[in-house]
Length: 151
Image (tube, rainbow, N blue to C red; front, side, top):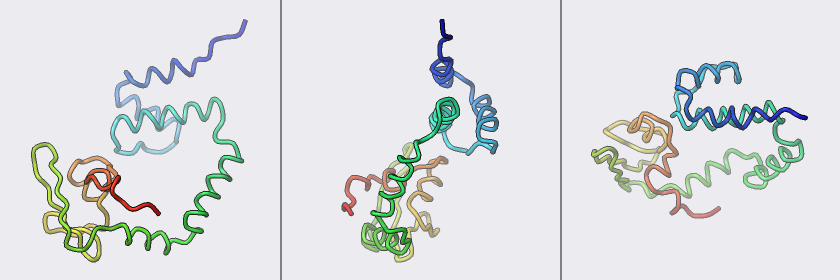
């Protein structure tokens, strides 16, 4: 008779594990300091890592396919990525308004990035991080993700 797989129980336990213990597990599994992301991020990355170590990571052909898809997207050309990002950026002068925890935040699109509370930022994600104290995709935080033009 084979022993039951302990991995599903270990994954389920992550939901009730205290955050300091999650950070301890992070140090053990990744051999780095845990990021200051939210708890759900820690849980999901730990769950992936536990499974990766127990069952193996992505198959080499999957990694090659992902790399090929990335090359199709931009040919490894960072300039092309920037052009796409500039094309998708709202028009200079546009004001993005988001209420967060009862406070209205206004971000202005500038030629070089974004401005919030009189300070320049290169990305919306950096602004969202300042507002929330956690990492957010700025496009999602400001409600632009679904309105961006497709590539």
